[in-house]
Amino acid sequence: LAKTTQPISMDSYEGQEVNITCSHNNIATNDYITWYQQFPSQGPRFIIQGYKTKVTNEVASLFIPADRKSSTLSLPRVSLSDTAVYYCLVGDGAAGNKLTFGGGTRVLVKP
Amino acid sequence: DAMVIQNPRYQVTQFGKPVTLSCSQTLNHNVMYWYQQKSSQAPKLLFHYYDKDFNNEADTPDNFQSRRPNTSFCFLDIRSPGLGDAAMYLCATSKVAELAKNIQYFGAGTRLSVL
Image (cartoon, rainbow over the protein chains, first blue to last red):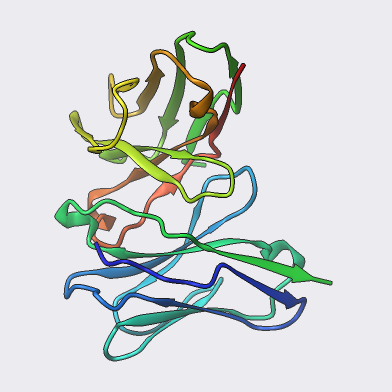
């Protein structure tokens, strides 16, 4: 499983864009990059996944450079309710590799 | 709505007294997982089922057991809870088509306290 490194915490303000970069230098060819969001006292929630280039959905965008050794989760115009822990995961679940959560990034959105 | 439901949300047990946590899903997913999450830590996988095939993580203590009587239900049994087993226990599911993309659907969790 590719090891991931992401910042421990980030502070932001309402209305700003938040970008969280995750490093995964030893990503394998078949690995996907997946991000989860977790609020206190709740289970993680899938946000977005990608393999390469850029992916966008109603919640976030995911930017993956050509070498795939890192990825950046972008949360546009955050609100107080976006305060959560964000986990970056890299792997190929179909190959029997289990989800291994890294440390996560604690994002605090301030008024 | 289809979902993953964990009961109870909060469970208090005594040191050494067996406890069972339950998880049900209406998603009809083949794969079910149990995770342990301690305060301010990331979730840690304990074991998972692919249909009826049970897969235990190497470092999961023998104190933790699981049962999956059918597709919809999965149970986590803690035979002799210790103080160190106090944690949030998360159940998750995945469908085969999304396994490669590491997409899992989590329940809200059961917070276990051991007195």
